[in-house]
Amino acid sequence: MRNIAFTFILGLLISCNSNDKRPLMGETEYQQILNASFKDATTSPLKKKDLKNFKGLDFFPVDSSFIVLSTFTKIENSPIFKMPTNTGREPFYKEYGLLNFIIKGKDFELTLYQDQDETLDEKYKDDLFLPFTDKTSGNETYGAGRYINLKTTDINPDGTFILNFNNSYNPYCAYNEKFSCPLTPRKNHLDVEIKAGVKSFKK
View 1 (tube, helix red, strand yellow):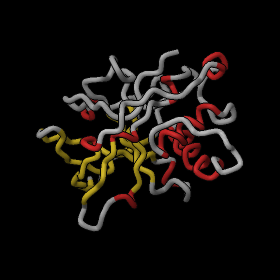
View 2 (cartoon, rainbow, N blue to C red; view 1 turned 180 degrees about the horizontal axis):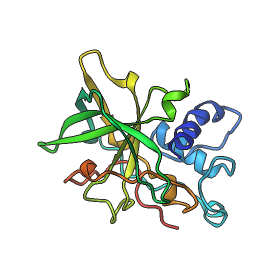
View 3 (cartoon, rainbow, N blue to C red; view 1 turned 135 degrees about the horizontal axis):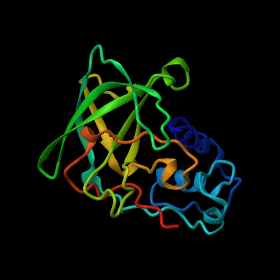
View 4 (cartoon, helix red, strand yellow; view 1 turned 120 degrees about the vertical axis):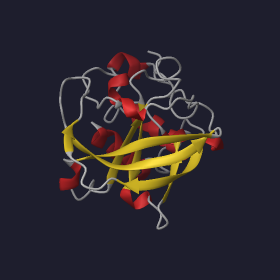
């Protein structure tokens, strides 16, 4: 599922060109690309009835305080495990590393994961998966958490990592139950409100 979400964003960087004269919805390029993909019936996870009335995803205002410099620590010899999903499917993942950062004066830590099927594909071998929940989950944002797509190449030579919560998005199962989505591990709950990224979808 995550491959699908990541692929449509990259694809639309190319396909959203000057041939489409309509302005794209969104405050940033990321938001515009995400909205364009949801509006396109060939890439959208929305059900037909929701796609018909789609006017754009609801985002928090972009907030630079949720773009944080984190410290990356690689987890060596991490065992492969089955990641629970909303459908009972159990894809194989491993813990790739830890991100430590500060938000609103408090220290936090999140675990980065790596889909083991993706490591077999040259196009996705550098992809990392960051699911999280926070104090907005189940209220302003999707209850099962949100995702951020990252890459191993995003890690700076000094071991730092730019983490932009404004680019967090909902899993496809937030829009359509036919999709199978990894459930956020309990250890990746942030005891703070992350008012950045995509909000809950109002059908």
